[in-house]
Picture 1 (tube, helix red, strand yellow):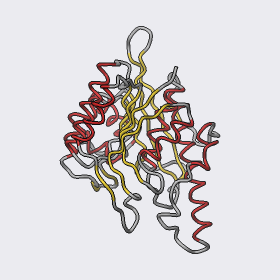
Picture 2 (picture 1 turned 180 degrees about the horizontal axis):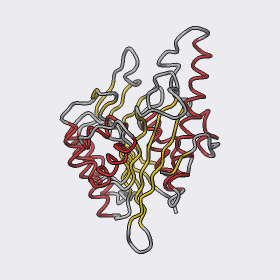
Picture 3 (picture 1 turned 90 degrees about the horizontal axis):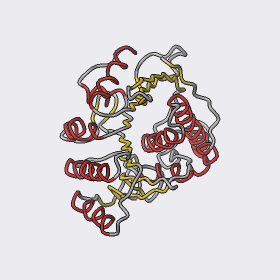
Picture 4 (picture 1 turned 135 degrees about the horizontal axis):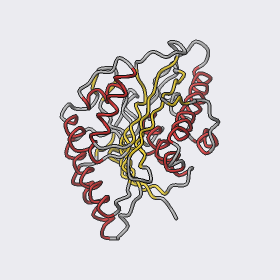
Length: 306
């Protein structure tokens, strides 16, 4: 039986971000993907220039109503990422709630894109919408440390505090929380960053069992765009394919990320030449070239069970 994903994300003509970053790995791993492009730009905003169009909440509603009229609004997953408009985000919530009434087993995977390293890069009025409306209907969320702190109102300076923050996020709705990056010190040194995951698994007796893991990930000295979209899509895939092994799902997800980024930086440096800093164009994710790593990643990032 096919597994279908409704992916509501940005779109670029050139490069990999939003739906272009998410759809390919999902399809490679066997999912049918219906894409709604929240924006359509010529390229991502890391370039010197960009042009394009932004989908409004009303236009999103029209698209969804068309799916309903044809009775094809049946999904197993919804995936969302970067959004800049509150009314659009609220329409996404309405659609997710309606789809969950249609299919109570639907899983909503949300990357709550708000900012990083202490700075917001979306309008501040999106924050309460995420906190009060989006996170409560999400099943899997993938915030970075700053976003997790913002959503809970708690600071993270130790692993214990990070675990407490993930507990707060669980209490808001999601059963799976992955803090994709943090400033916590790694035992492997300053060239590694810490990611943390927490998953509530329902046992046969109906009670919930908490699984928690830590991953130490090699840093890559470059700025990539589209990695959050790729991460959320790959996590969706591997949690579906390993529903009872959260540790394995995270190890495969982070290993895919490692392989894609290493291939991307190697290609970018070769294109830029010795001593030159790669451009935004040269740092576009090498998705197609990483097909085999997405399908069957060598596990190079190992998780520690906490």
